[in-house]
Structure formats: structure tokens, C-alpha cells
Amino acid sequence: MNDEMIMEKISRILVDEFEIEEDKITTEATLYDELGLDSLDGVDLIVMLENEFGFKVDRKQDESVIRAMRNVQHIVDFIKQKAA
Amino acid sequence: MQINRVVITGMGAVSPFGAGADKMYDSLCAGKTGVVNLKKEWQEIVSDLECWVGAPVIEELNEKKIPRRYRKLMGRTAILSYFAALEAIESAGITDEMLRSGEVGVCFGSSLGSIQSTAEFFSEIIRTSESHQLSSGMFFQVMSHTAAANLAHVFGITGRVLAANAACASSLQSIGVAYEQVRYGMADIMICGGAEELHAYTSTSFDIVQGTSTHYNDSPSDTPRPFDRDRDGTVCGEGAGCLIIESEESAKKRGATILAEIIGFQTSASGEHMSHSNAESIVSCMRKTLQSAGINPEDVDYINAHATATELGDLHEAQAIEEVFNGHKIPVSSLKGYMGHTLGASGALELIASVFMMRDQQILPTRNLSNPDDAAKNLRHVTSIEPAKLDIILKNSFAFGGINTALLIRSYKS
Image (cartoon, rainbow over the protein chains, first blue to last red):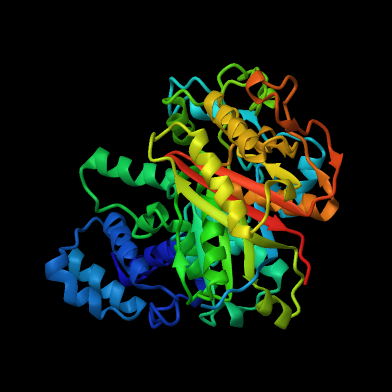
């Protein structure tokens, strides 16, 4: 799965589940400031990504990476790492 | 200690008749009922209910109006509360700046958190023995103070946030507790009331203690029948009622329209039985309410009864009214025949209707009261809309847990 396909699936989740306007979603868009997500959304987003991409997050092992996520590209990179 | 006069300056309602306090009152005046047969919806959830009638809020509420960051934490109980509170806040002319000032508080109750959310939350855990797939927002829909906390969150309240959760007395107790906050100077303004979400599980809780109406499933508009000899139990309803109350000083300072004054409140317990009411403790509660306002029984112009159409509940309230008002034939009516028993919302919704009655100087009758029961024959029942001089109104609400509440309002005179 290439970056573009991953991005498309992430966008769909952000639009359908978090009611974010599609034109706001870019790889550089910051999750909290620009897309308006909060820490609770972050928890739900991880579960949705797990279900969509078929991986399992290890809360202890992945915690630092998840905490460091600031923009959409960081999510794309995380998914590629988990799927690898 | 600072003692303030406490006035009502805003009201909002979501009732089985839809969103809007005016819509509720107009429907009551027209003698409408919100009670319908819900067997189709309920039998897949609980197959062996005896009561298949309820009074849901059928009107679709525009939930998308609530920004998602707040809405995701709200179940139906909080959403009903939001629309009632929004109407109350707007009608009172409370600004965003005031809401965030720290001088405005919330006291809002319900019997439970969102029942639908609770059902989803626990059924997922029971089904999978895992919590992983649960939405992070669900607990905030389930928690017991979901209505009060969500109202504080969505309106940016930084003052006191209280939740007087006392089942069917939740909203009147919340209004009473809010009254005490303002009266004794703990807050300038309180957003207060209560809500209840209708679900098959709600009716189940009354069904299993044989408190529901079971003989009118095919003629829902004929039940509940408060004080009637053919009453056979209550009917659960849905809604939310909200009042804005504030100190007279605050209301005058900002030029608010004063709708009525709250002059007395008492809440007490029977200390005797969890599900049965108790006439003696109701007598004590009403007497202490009158004493708290410094008035005599004969000063009361109308009693808006709790009367839910259960055999014992109506009997005990009737006995208590008879004893307290001893020969003074104060007009009495119950509004349960129109909206069912909206449980945690009932005290607030019926108090709002009482404020409207005071405005219009008329008393709404007890719907479905055709033949007063012998047990309540000495009450001065209101059976059709009656013009009346309404200066002081007593509102009763009682609840499981042996809880009694009574509150007095008076037409405002500066």
C-alpha cells in the first residue's frame, strides 16, 4: 500500500468519523490545532486505524511514537511502520 | 449570612410534545397526550414487559447543531438536557461572558446516565470480554452526572457543578439545591433542572416492581390516570426541563424579565421503604416547605401534584395533602396524564407548566381523571381548565429511595 492509498483511507476516517472538512486534510495538517482533534479523539483514532489497516498497537511499545504524532504525515509513517 | 430572594428568569423544555416550553404548555392546554404504544420498538429489547406504552420525545432534535467536540461526549440524556438548557439560557438573556464568569453554576439531575449508551458500553464488554473497541467518549455519556457535566462543558461553566440525582425527584431536587445556592450567596445564577431518556430498560425498572400501567396498551391515550379509580400504574416518559434561577439583585441589575419567585423548598426521606411512598414523611416535607417560606397552608392557591397513577403513591399523596391542608380545599392536579411520568425531568417540566399557569391565571386539569378514587375523594380535583387567582403554587415530586421534595413559587412582587 503506497502513501497515497494510506492517505485516502485516513482521510475517509477523519471525514466520516471526526466530521473534519475534507479540504483541511493535508499531510502537513496538525492534528490538534488545525484539525481540531483532542486527546480522546486520538484514542479513538488509533482504534479505527487498527481496524482499518489490520495491525495492533502495543500501548507500552508504541506509546512514545503515538505521543509524538503531530500531523497527518506522522500517522502515515506510523501505519507504514506497523504494516512493515 | 447573605440571604437573597431567588427568582426564575428563563425556562426551556423538551417534552414528549417536542422542543420548546411554549410547545409543551400549548399542548397541555389543548389536552393532548404524548403517550403511545411502543411494543414494536421495545419487544426486541425486553420481550416480557407488561407495559408497552411510553411517552417518548418523537420530534427529531437537531443534534448536529452541537459541535462534535461536545456532542461526542453526550448520550441522549445530555442531548435532551442541552436543548432545554439552551432555550432557558437564551430566554433568560444569559450571555457567554456571564456563563464563563464563575458566578453561574449548574445543578442538573437524572435517574441514570444515558441508558442507551450504558447498554452499548456494557454489552460490548460482556460480548467480547474486552474494552478495546469502546469509544473513549462513552463513559461521559454513561456517568451519573452526565447531564450536569456536559452542560458545564458545552456552555463553558466555571462555577459550581452539582448533580442531584434522585430518580423521579431529580429535577425538583436539583432546582431546590440550586435555589439554596443562590439564596445563600454561593452563586448568582444557576442553570437547573433534570432530564430522562426513555428506553425499554427504563420501563422495565417500573415493570418489575409492578408500578407500570398494563391495562391500556391498546388505548395509550387513556393512561396514566392520576387519582382515578381505574388507574393501574404509571407510564414512563422522556424529556428535559431547565430553569434559570438567580438572585433578585442579579436579575434586576441586568434588567431580566422575572417570571416567578421561588420562596420555599424542602427535601426529606421516609427512612422506611425504598419503593413505597410514605404519607407521614410527605406531610412533614410539605409542612417544612411551607414553614421555610413563612406561609400558611391556606396561602397556597394550587398544588401541582406528583401523582403518577400508582395505587399507593396517589393514595399517600392524597392523604398527605388532606392532612397538611386540613379542610382548605386547595385545587390539585397532576400533569402525568399528558406526558407520562418523565421521571428525572418531571419536576422541572411540571414546574415550568406551573409558571405558565401562574402567568395565565388558570389551572390545567388532571387528564384521564374521570372518576376520582375514594382514596382521593376529599381532594379538590381540577377536571377542566379553570381560571384561578394563582399567587402561590406548591409543586411536589417524590422518588424511589423514599425521597420527598416540595417547592413553592410565588408571583413576583418587588
